[in-house]
Length: 202
Picture 1: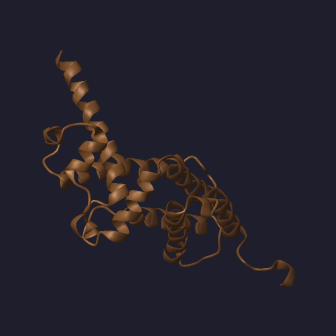
Picture 2: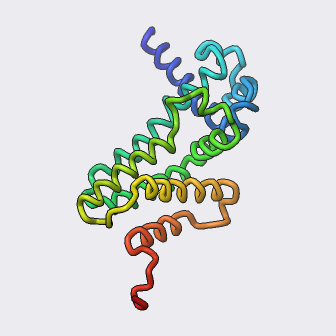
């Protein structure tokens, strides 16, 4: 009986997190109310306080239990790819798939990063773009060691890759019909592999 009750509480908590992240993504955490989340989850407002002390605690749990694992899963999924540039391309593709399958996650990142000035100030340990930047920079350093790319400023390279990804996905979220992000990913791969020089004119 106790085990069944525990499972039931976990299911309710997980459902709350899933619905909360969707509402946060749509409205932004500053504009979202407990009532909004309760309505989306189809439960009484008081039930939310059984699991979370405040909206801020619920927001923090959304980050820890939903956002961070998705980010780490993408990075982990590329570990088995030996070629560094193929690994970078797969990272881009996997992030695109995440956005297509769970657009509310990308929308949450976009809304909070761009419209909530206090977001990173109050959460210094949370910055998914910084996590991506560090990973791409490390990967670029390995690519240089492997002679897959020429020696270059890896920090700038990371900013270039993550910046393009962030901008493309933000635009797609605003207007999904405005571009084919899968094709953009392929084009990014081509540019990374071959650069921008016209070899016929060298």
